[in-house]
Image (cartoon, rainbow, N blue to C red; front, top):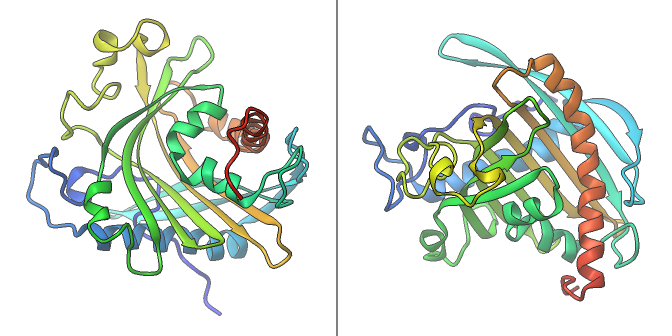
Length: 301
């Protein structure tokens, strides 16, 4: 059996507006004709294949660790992926994790409905809520009204599909400057018992200045006082999150990511920190879910 290969979109490569479907407020510098639904299907197909085939078949297994208050053990994985573009070969350092959670509304775990409500629905806003280092999730644009023309469905069995562009802002420890990661975020149900979230880096140069807040420096003038007005450096990341109910009834959560925080932070230092951050997210999400449950905001099962 041949080894699966990653696609062309789910990569640590910055998309430009000519790579994206047309949007009423975006004026690309050169003509392009990217069909919205073809683009969405390609992104989602690549994301599902990466999570379901590429990671389990090709990634190297690492340590098994804990991420309190989550009860589930977290399996760490990694792989360097060589990719070619314009005659050049680069290496993307990917890190992943897998965890299996009891599908119950109890301490240290969460139901599938809670995972769905927290990770697929309003993905970026919720990530800001449960991740202490994320101080803003600024929405730049979305294609959701255009997707709704077809009932939110995309060929390939994808339902409740959304596509947005966000600026994800992370606070960094001094003396480093804070980071903004502009990303295209595509989410979809892949069945009643599974979903996928794909994030791809994007260049915001051709987006309206009034819609972009951080990548163009407008935050230093127009943002609320405090963290959001500080100098910020643009970084990039790509990620895939896959959640599904297993035959046992438990919930499997897989996430894989590659990133480059840019600035003066050496890549070797970045690579040392990513696995720990990826691991920590499991406990952060479970705690956030438990807190919402306690306050009466839990998802309906």
